[in-house]
Image (tube, rainbow, N blue to C red; front, side, top):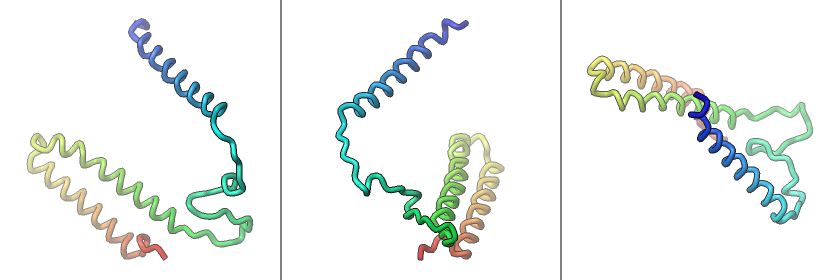
Amino acid sequence: MLQNFVPVLILFLFAAAFGLGVLLISSLLGPKRPTAAKQATYECGMDVQPDARRPLDVKYYLIAMAFLIFDVEVIFLYPWAVQFKSLGLFGFIEMLVFLFILLVGYAYIWKKGVLEWE
């Protein structure tokens, strides 16, 4: 039974050796010119401020969360499209209900102003 997994183990070993080899070669041969801009902390498109009492702008995070939610929900369309003929009218109506719920959620975040970048 274990001999069936030997090719997979060999593939993983080759992949790990290649990845580590490329990292090692690039660290040895690559240019090293550190500057203040390269060493500065960069976090999610905003400059890091040392003052913790400063209010945090959450617009970036709201848009990222909305993108993730709608992106994951759109993934559910692919299996439906593959099985479209076998699902028949019931599957079509269920997908219309699903898309309506998505549209309601989109209208809600639009009305709340999540998509407006100020």
